[in-house]
Length: 155
Image (tube, rainbow, N blue to C red):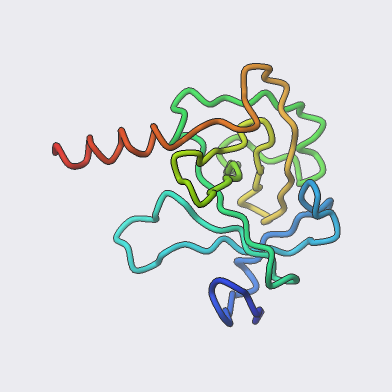
């Protein structure tokens, strides 16, 4: 599938890489087809990826694996909810959280309250609101990335 994007130009994504959101994403319920975009030139997948709409060129959300920013991240998700994406086994679930990256990167946040759940077997996905009361909608991640950078520099 070929898509025009604002940030990445024209991209060609293989059909078996398209992720479908049957209910859309919160605030963008009409958009159903997305692809994960990341820097393939890096040896390892970079920590921040982009969830790019295949239907709307301007819609690209920065996303990150929550384990990269909060090691003990364990969202409570009702089993009933995951049935809409094929009731995946734990090993078939991939979780991302959306990020907000303002001009002042010291205010960069991640939304731990509304993760994106992907069933890797059938590429069906959904965004849910988790039951964990201690997970913030705007979890500051700047300090986390700074600490990781210092750790890498010391190795």
